[in-house]
Image 1 (cartoon, rainbow, N blue to C red):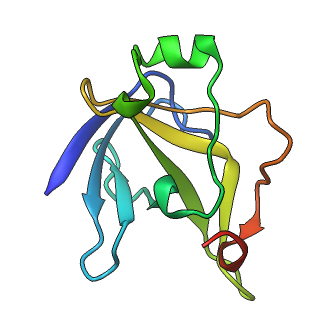
Image 2 (tube, rainbow, N blue to C red):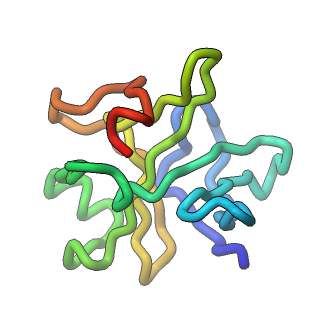
Length: 125
């Protein structure tokens, strides 16, 4: 099943694209493919942030307001997986956050320097 998402701002590096489909990757629990509706060949792989050890990003009030989040339970947090020759990494500094009620989404850059851009998946899984 694919959930249709509307980004309030384009994802970093995907200027002008705001409509995406989010679907589970068959056979890979909590792994998702995020495909552009306008350019289906453009795809990111996302991992459910709830599966990561000690990952609890905090949004600013402005960020939460952009997605019309009224409680933390309304938010689903995903991290972008980056394939690398040595090991897969995840971007913890710029998660994709989805309001599960409205299907509005955004990629936010966090103000917390604890999170890295290219963290080995093995270190947080």
